[in-house]
Image (cartoon, rainbow, N blue to C red; front, side, top):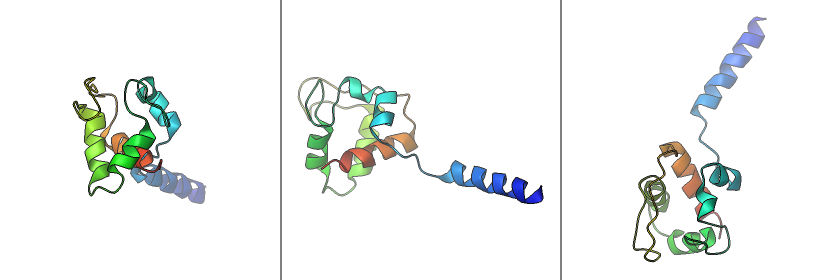
Length: 103
């Protein structure tokens, strides 16, 4: 019984500190795919185009994570990207990392 309790406690601790893993499912759940697609422009740019533009830039993950949460305008055209308040900082960073992996 003690071993089971210790295993559950260890799993809970690992889960609490594990970074959010992002993929297309998270992007859909956070409503990102309403304006973006992986490989084609919709309202906003294709994620592959974002990865190509920012992929080699120092600090790209943090920059994109901030844009995901706070929104932005003027970089990809006249339509602004609204802030996404339902995305936590960890989720924004995970989404940015996933987007930058789509080269």
